[in-house]
Image (cartoon, rainbow over all chains, first blue to last red; front, side):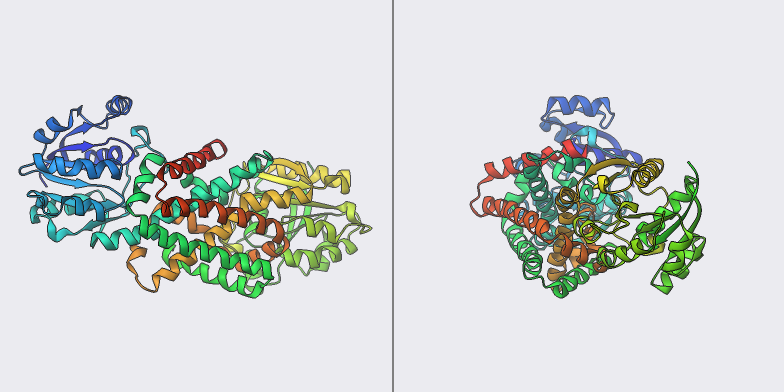
Length: 282
Length: 282
């Protein structure tokens, strides 16, 4: 596979980790960074994540592949403009929502050069210093609406994700957003709300923090996630997230009702049903 | 510190991991297991967790320390009977709820020989095969109502927990149960309910499981936890768990309301408030 000149727009957790992995696997001839936050730009250079920082327009002109890894609200604003500027380049994004983004460029004369993707990996941290080696390995990446993209662009993107160790899933953007609400977005809302539940209590008593256990840490760690990244995701996937959130609240109410009515047989059933998640988590 | 003859009642995740750690640190002259489940008994012997299996009565008679590590409903039934049989032995438990247990032996003539403890460690797995080395290290252990226990018993228990690497917290059983509801019990309910939310959806579509990410795994892994252990915990800590669950549902409703009303400024605030959990999780 020929090494390409790659521009990464947004050298944070995702863009930075992609840069590390593209270098590690020898897939990039050169990586140019584009970064609106000057501190992040300086840090990304210090960390050697990219070879050079350039303004967007120059980066697009000098690269064969442009990867967008910025919050999904900024993505929607930026993607049509980037497509205006490309000729034969491949453009892909790594955003957590897909429907609105795909709609934003439907009918664009260069739509074929764009491949909509969502590599299903992340952590609760952000910025270039959060980038980690060997990220994405053994994780899923979703390719959406591949039929709307040029074959050569899809082929390069798929091959690249495979080379960095991901397994590919294809689906349309609408289905992606629904599924993402279940396997990612709701987990974040639950975690944020759980953190707020405990923080509300903490005003009264500091002792609980000394007791915080591994189970607690596991369920609330996502609550450290960045608002600038997550608010736009919830905005763009509002209807699906609301549906899942309603379902989740109604599942919690079943637990509440069991406790209120002291119906411990049903509580046992609810827990045994939840245990079936072993099938998915392994 | 003189090695003691120790009986562990319930050689599962907690009892088995304690056995490993007591041996590792050279704190036990001999460990006798008591186990109602014959398969678990056989497995615990195979794994070398204990030196011998004995019926409860003999184990109590032959040991200097008796550690109860069984589900909290069984604990309440068993503890008074064990105290009936002890003379100079030390009895401690490792249960997740404390108030009802302490009340069940208040006024018992041998109350002083019993120390109520909750080592704040566990995993979502159960049984002797779930026991792990170096468990409990750098975790908190809560000692409850220490003034009701004999000084020598408290001293040995505290020294032992310190030697296996835990840091001690002292509080009364009522306070413990309230705090445990916040830092442990609610996380489990959230996780069970989240698993059921996703499993409800799964009837319609299998694709979401291929997309399950690390964030999802983190928030639902506790949903694999055992009903036989958790139903009695929720029963015994019913009022606190209900209070926290109500608070959690009301926190989730704030997220729901933000999405319904498209109030993204407040959503941003809720997330930034949740980020303060960094202070606790580090």
